Image (cartoon, rainbow, N blue to C red):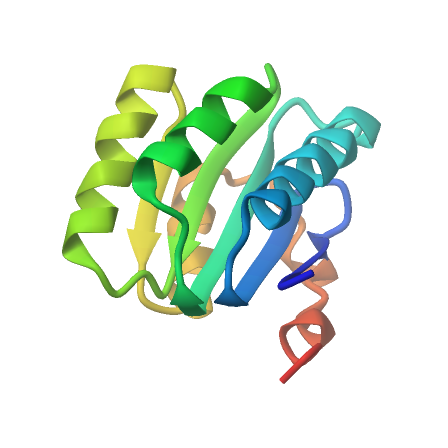
Length: 139
């Protein structure tokens, strides 16, 4: 599996990192695990940071959109922040698809920028509980 998933801030922000060649099963697993984590959180909105900067071969955008549509949007899903997406076309396609599926998505270049973005959008995040150790897993 070319993906790791853990809490960046317990019950508040999930960190999902994909790398290498991504399969439909990797994305399906990531979406299901993220949904289950949101289900288990008591928080009204749970945000997700998707670190995609190390993906060598992404899924076809149509396949990705179909998987997101199949999975559905969790009612307590907050912002989905994409980190490291290099393709302007994929960034634009993600925003278009997000609009169709009523999903909040934003793209940034670094994890630090994702923190700044979420800090501006959700003042209740407990930043003192950030688990930076998960950024090193698999590197």
